[in-house]
Length: 397
Ligand SMILES: Cc1cc2nc3c(=O)[nH]c(=O)nc-3n(C[C@H](O)[C@H](O)[C@H](O)COP(=O)(O)OP(=O)(O)OC[C@H]3O[C@@H](n4cnc5c(N)ncnc54)[C@H](O)[C@@H]3O)c2cc1C
Image 1: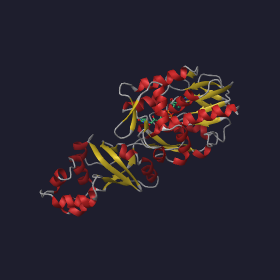
Image 2: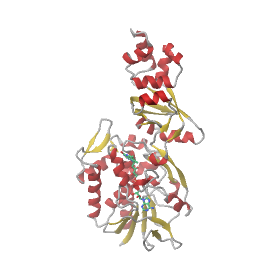
Image 3: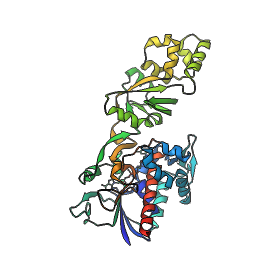
Image 4: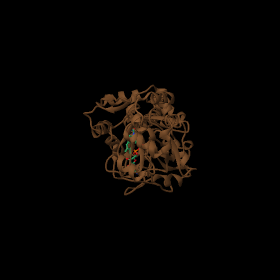
């Protein structure tokens, strides 16, 4: 029997452990925290969005690069994840926006515990509170407080570099760089962006949502919700564009996004409604005839000139594209996920590292991106599944 060492205990690693054939591999899983799946639990704090219910091709199109992620998502789809969880006794439901969550009576810790129980029933050994610190000159794996070990197969699943408190500290990047592996710098993704609000605006609107809006930037557009925060703007509509906004920040100090406050209406429809309005004050028309709330109207005023309110045609156009200036991304540690990590050309189609023998890399450690909506967990679970399938089949040939 061969030894398989899994380092890291997030969703990618747990799915691998759950799927690996323990008649072929003696498996040990190491994690530096005293329990596995800490980030999975943090993810559950705002509603554990496990995956997204959509046709597979649509699901795949949300990932970047989609052609890299497609084979893993095809081998373990959103429906496969839902069925697998159901077999573990984790029922799910599809929310109004097609996001998939555990049944309300199931707390995230219970979901995690059912996955762990299943893994433990396969006699996989967990070694916790044990930090991997690199390789020694003989290529053996080194852990704090343990003698170096050798393993026939090693899978790294060390996560990205946000929410360090969960163990995903990204410190592994230097250890991989020393092996000649290219690691892209970490940047916040699915994160808030800084806006220079004036004092009056933020005092009145901090914490207020902007519902049913759309955000556009370059060729990207996302419908959803935003929340006004002291820092700036957060929420799924801006998270969805975070990769392209961040790419623009590489060369620019500020980035202007367009906010559509009325995505359900065309500019022409807004103009017609405005012209037919019985009221005469612009703010009243925006409120009563166009159903814009106080926050939406204030944001329109914040980023435009007063004269705009005397020019109905231009006002209608601006409602569809309020120019909002962003000054930076939120700090890395507060991000939901991270851009950067191991360059994708450092692994082959089976996620095997080309420069370190018998070594694989899975999950958020690799430099791929997906928006919130369950896509991140789905991507990690799919990679864990795919690698287990590969290793199980590799041993049989
Ligand atoms: C606030 C928040 C909300 C989120 N909500 C969602 C959501 O609703 N839906 C969704 O799809 N995704 C969500 N995510 C993202 C999702 O949780 C992550 O993408 C996912 O956990 C990444 O899984 P992973 O297996 O790659 O690594 P991780 O979950 O990051 O796990 C990595 C593990 O490696 C261990 N480790 C790291 N370095 C070492 C070392 N040197 N030695 C030993 N162990 C080490 C860590 O302790 C950790 O346990 C959210 C994330 C956050 C922060």
